[in-house]
Image 1 (cartoon, rainbow, N blue to C red):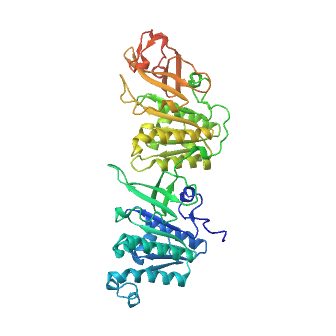
Image 2: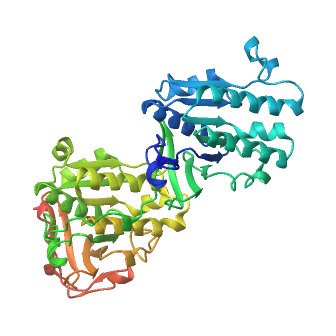
Image 3: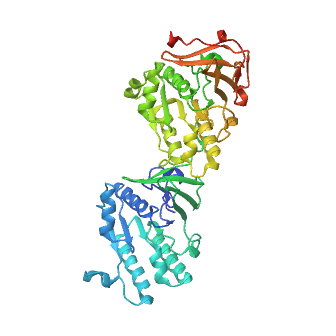
Amino acid sequence: MDQDDAAPTPTGVPGLDYVLRGGYARYRSHLIEGRPGSGKTTLGLQFLIEGVAAGETCLYITLSESKRELLAVATRHGWTLDGIVILELVPPELSLDPSQLQTLVHSSDLELGETVRSALAEIETLKPDRVVFDSLSEIRLLSQGSLRYRRQVLALKSFFLLNDATVLLLDDLTAEHDDFNLHSISHGVIRMEQLSPIYGSERRRLRVIKMRGVEIRGGFHDFVIRPGGVIVFPRLVAAEHEEGLHGPPALSDSSVDALMGGGLARGTSNLLIGPSGVGKSTIASSYGHAALLRGERVLVLLFDETKRIFLTRAAGVGLDLQKFVDQGALLLEQIDPADLSPGELSTLIQKAVELSDVRIVVIDSLTGYLNALAEQQYLVLQMHEILTYLNHKGVVTILLLANHGLIGNMSVPIDITYLCDAVMLLRFFESGGRLRRAISVVKKRVGPHEDTIREFRIGSQGLAVGEPLAEFRGILTGVPLFEGTSSELLEDKDRA
């Protein structure tokens, strides 16, 4: 038996080989199905281009698109189809080329046989290693019956197998009732889907329905079609990744560390909860700045503000982050929730950790991440996998979550506190006709933490944390009330 029989064959699609545990099965037929526009043709072309690069003979059999259209697709992606043989099977009445007269005849009973024979003759002559057949919907229409259609595709599959060809059969699902007709006779089945949210760009995902003899990575995997082709973002599975180094706790530039019992432990996720403007981003920036000064790399994902505003605000409290951006130590990514899929986001984080050795990840904020999900009920599952992965790698994760509203009774859009190892609560409170800020640590799994409530101030020199506020009640209700004296509060040195 040939040792290469059913061995993994690279797909030419970034991320897909990981999902398939190496690629398509060699010398087998695979069904790629999806609605028009889902990316099947692009996926097929990438498969053949990969084959040409490996020195293999490649054949594209098309019944639905002309060679001219395929060349236009390739040009838009910056590809060349040199080395790929394109066989057009078109009705003679649509072609002025006499050489095309033998491909199809007018009688529907004969058209199918002629079409299949033309394809088989080309395969016998060329002996291709890789074949893309686009598309089976044309065979379905010519068959005029599910039984005859199945028999014809089964005959094609057997012929491909005898000629040692690795084949992709594309199907655009024009007949939904025949959806599962070919699943049993195909070695592998991949379903490509295109979703249209109410707002924002379309979302694409794929699922490997079957791949015989392979423990595929199941579930839905997001993908995009961009200049250069299809890119698949495999679903993150934290348990499949090796454990990283941990090391000493991460300290900040401020006295916030005292509340946290000496900094943030490595391999932990830390949640900052508070209303907009209370100082969550500033505290996160303080930890990031201190890490950058230690020579570590930091990733900041911005959902709620632009890079310019983030850097300007940090500079306003004495944190010069621009130079670290210029050096490449601070990876600052501005995320558009309307365009980015959750799978692409998790892949971005994973590459930053594994390729750039990022040690601190800041997500600003979870509210923006929530808006990035079309199916918001799965935010917790997605975030659980990301946090588990980052903790496993010894990365300090800082998550920001904004409350609904600024003052009074407040709620959060989603409860994710049980996933986090530490939770820091920030609130506004009023005293002497002025709006002040209070900070407290309400949870820390690793090590001790201070249980007092302190005032903190944000100034041009950074963060300042005051003494415990003994005469302070109501902060956990969202309606804090200070009943002490003004001498216990921080003086506003900027006003002096």
